[in-house]
Image (cartoon, rainbow, N blue to C red; front, side):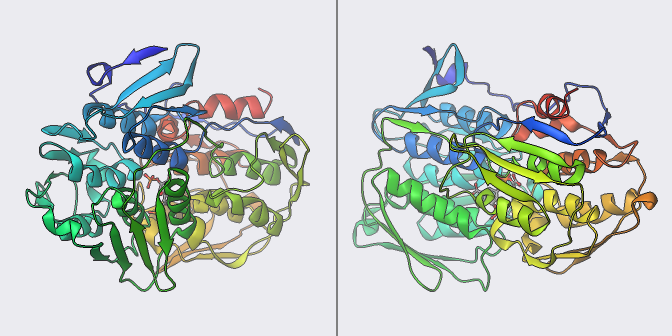
Length: 459
Ligand SMILES: O=C(O)C1=C[C@@H](OP(=O)(O)O)[C@@H](O)[C@H](O)C1
Ligand SMILES: C=C(OP(=O)(O)O)C(=O)O
């Protein structure tokens, strides 16, 4: 094991750079596919396990950890706050997390969130348990992402919040309350409107067990996206020995308890990142398999096989855990389809919808305007750019197929958004002449997207 101390952790933001030249000519599929693609670890699970391990009191070994920009940012941030990581020299995805012995995090530090929602929404809560103020900053583009509901929640727990730019946005500085005696009186009551991101709820649930009287959390908004991600947070807290329950009307109770994940935790592959690869089988025909597809999962990507089936794919599973998508190259439109549970796969579904035979109206995803970029605007612009037809709705995106002959290649923008890059690569399988600007932005959640993509195509 190589020991990494906070001082060894990269302090500057791991950047998403293009390894393959910019722009990248997206490869066309020359025929039906026959590929098996191993998908790296789940971003959402990796960053939850890193945070839960940091909140514990014993070493935890994570196996199959995603190593990409979002997890590097998380590890660098936790390292700055006093967590130590030991990485296996032969396998960087095998990492042991050693939480601070004192149970308190190092304050007086600045956290770089990059553009990672899981870093900017899961780490502010840890400032409650730091021995000094903690400042948060990130990419310029991250300044656009909503933060206020989380910080309002922390304010209700007595945290002093100082916005250093625009109110409700990064950058900001947090200082834990001096007087926490009232937190022992019973569960701390917090009420926030989490309709713009489920990550605010997850970020507060993650620290609820460490509050002396626990937490009673209420969501006051009229809709809540990405419920599977909230259930994932609850399942992971329970796996660490925490006690958390969800009420019927958007409320949660977390009992005070120690959090300790099992000594060794295996991270599932990122099922949302499987979407472009499995979707490729629908576009090009043939079959694509993904190994280690879990039988049961809390990931919203678990909904993917059903969605691809609705678009015309055949789905099969092997005894050895492969999930295989097989198709003939025809794609059915989805009609009106509520994607609120799995908004992060919307760009991949949108690419399929552009090439489908019937229309698709993706709804329940207005919150995508606060993702890495305004994804609804970005998808409309990029689909229109290549001759397709798409229209932003209040709550989603309307995609009407056009004749394939009307679709043409162009230089597609990615807006520093990994999923806009993989969306463009999917279209590039069927539309000649697509070039992708800054394809290296895929490093946010996939260490080597272009390598995996060309290998899938047999190039
Ligand atoms: O908790 C998580 O790991 C995530 C929750 C979702 O956020 P939103 O609820 O903001 O969509 C999802 O889109 C994001 O990619 C990851
Ligand atoms: C919305 C996403 O990421 P983040 O975790 O930065 O919110 C995403 O990966 O699609």
